[in-house]
Image (cartoon, rainbow, N blue to C red):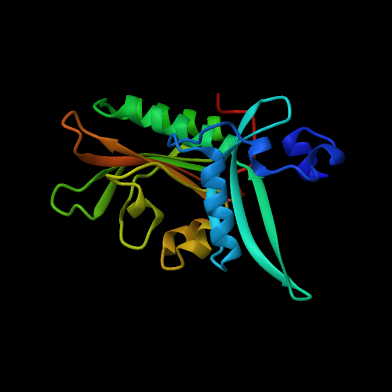
Length: 231
C-alpha cells in the first residue's frame, strides 16, 4: 500500500512495469535513466547490494527524490530482486534550505544576528538544538560555537573537537543529513550521547575567499520526519 501511495498509482498499474516507467528520461547527473537503472539492477543481481538516490516520477509525471536499496534474494534456486524505495523529498528540501541559509550567513557578523539565526532555525526545523560554530584559528580541528539554541532559548557557548563526529563530514565539504540513528553511526561522539541526539543536519560555512570557516548544525532527539516546515 505504501508503494502505491508513493508512486500515486493502483496495483495493476505498477505490476509488470519496468523502473523506467516511473523515472524521468535522465537523472541528477544527466545520465540516461534506463541505462543507469540497468547498471544498478545488474550489479544487484551479481550480488553487489545497491544503495543510491534516484529521481522517480509518479504516474501523473510528478517528480520526487527517492532513496533506493536493491538486494538479490535467492529462493528455491531462483534469483529475485528486492527493491526498497523511500521518498526523501523532504530531507533534500531540508538539506537545500540549510545550505542556502549557510551561504547567506557566511560573512555576516554579530552576536544578536547569530542568536536570532539559531532560534529561527530551531523553530523552522522543529528541533531541540541548533548552533553556529567557527573553526579555532589555532586548532582547525576544534569548533568554537558562536550561538547555541536549546528548546528555543539561547544557551551558553562551548567548543568541541571535530574528530569522529558528523561535523567532520561537513566542515569544508558539503551539507550532511542523518535523519535517524546518528549516535549509532558515530559511536565515539560522546556529545551526541550526552545530548540524546537522534538526528542531525549540518551545512558548511565559507569565508569570502571560499575557505572553510565553520558550520551550522541542527539536531533533534527525534528522527527528522517529512514535515512541511521547510519551503
